[in-house]
Image 1 (spheres, rainbow over the protein chains, first blue to last red):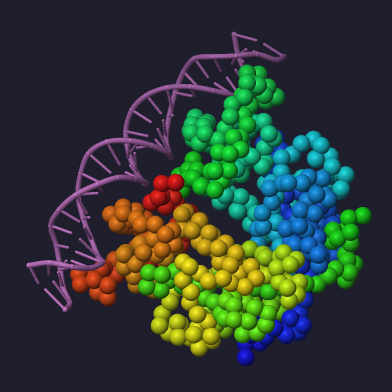
Image 2 (image 1 turned 60 degrees about the vertical axis):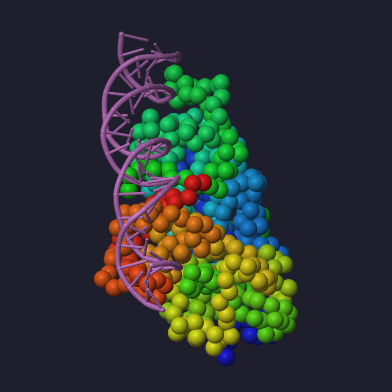
Length: 240
Length: 240
DNA sequence: GCAAAAGTGTTACGCTTACACCCATGG
DNA sequence: CCATGGGTGTAAGCGTAACACTTTTGC
């Protein structure tokens, strides 16, 4: 009969072929107006010296999510970070080293001097997603897919909470959107739209690091942000 | 050092643990106003007699997409069907039979008498997603996740082409949306919105199977449909 | 005082919503 | 002739898009 349909053949568990399973993490950070992704320079052959995402094999005693979180923690020291499965990369020939399936997981983190230093002590670097150098295997595709996912997300759901520091200015938030979409937005309409969503709380402080006048700092209203994350909206600051 | 980081240790390929990898297919069909999912009654222990999605282990020489398409073909005889990866189910304890990771893949097919018969000869049945019986393992969750994905998709991207026959009426399309969201829509607004998208082509024929007057048949304008599939829109026939 | 970034309002347009009746036909 | 489902229009309200100048302040 249909040989690998496991419903029909419980004993096929033993006959089935096991496969190496890995996770690869596409870790995005927003650093002073530039969207970056975390990568390594491989130190072993093959592809020694080439850029690579950071990953790990999935162990017997962990789920893929747990493996991805483990990797993220090992490299950034961070826990409780936004992380979401992207997709499976399973081409038979994707890794010349061995038949290996990889689950792409992307994460959004808010960059601070602290965790920038930490990643660097682990030999990782933050690469701008604009003019990204070539990455090994299908890692280039993983970054492209993760970016597309992020752009789609941003059109219909709020983003920013995960990538920005707790306190941020509206110009910073706008520059995040502009960097992500590689477009410029009208400041008046951008503010209007965002403020109308009622998910921003204006603080009394100003941030004067990027202008003499200073820009008001905001925080996300966590509840409203999450409501919108579930409900979705149409963030149409662009025509098509 | 960080033991399973494979960038740092090429020889870890050998040490790493292989895992059973499966695909499970959530196959949706729209049958006379009812959204259904394809399931089997397990014929072996454990869980003999329980409902189960159809799946298969992934072989050494195939990708997960190929495995899913193989399963779909084996059970429905159909090729070139809309199929998309849902997510990975990888809890260590999800399958008491063995440590096994499963990639959920959902498919949308247009039901005809032909492929309804075919699936039945394979022992599969079409279950309404309303009042779905319990499914084995995490298959219930898979169906719930796939439905949520489909609903989200339908809010911002066109659906229908994959689930409806080539020629369909607007009331049929509306009933698809109503069934998916378990809501009723205003017919005038529904038509207006859909026709304004310019993705429907009205034919000269009428379908008289569900009314004496008969409803005009339409086809999707394939190009426009795909444009909208990429661009997205805000299908807001519901408030929140 | 000037350069550089932050902040602000209005109008036109298009899409969304709410809502009720006539049409065509088979029986 | 009537029951059944198919098909139509309009007005009010809301969100989007386009557009240019004033404010603040460090230097």
